[in-house]
Image (cartoon, rainbow, N blue to C red):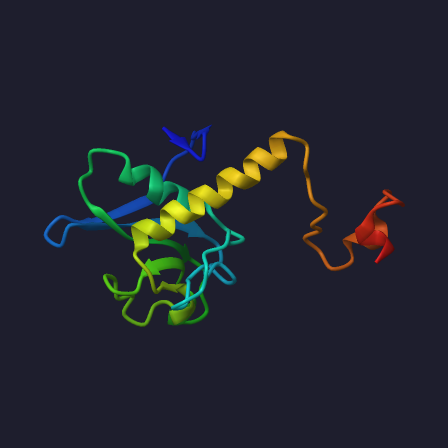
Length: 158
């Protein structure tokens, strides 16, 4: 199966299907789901969230013969400290109710299938740029630039 022009190799941790309602939810287990929310408020433009694994799995499953709509791509934090920390990621705010187990920052206020398509297009753009050698400076730690050996890097010079 392909996603954004790249062959996928991996396994979904869990898929909960509700054939009666015609939808499914992808669930990926993580030690913590903190900072995994990737919802979208009404009127906002989709952007690539920090964590896309669940969204990729959801889009891939839509291309199978499952015959169900996707209602969410969530990360289950098995070390959650409170009920609202249990689930994070993205879910269709119109079709899925996380029953207090996720914050509203994971709700997507647009057609969820269109959201998945938009994320795939954005990821495809980034992959195309990477394949052309365009690798932007994007340190993941606040002090990473202090220890970087690239002395002419714009991030270090800032």
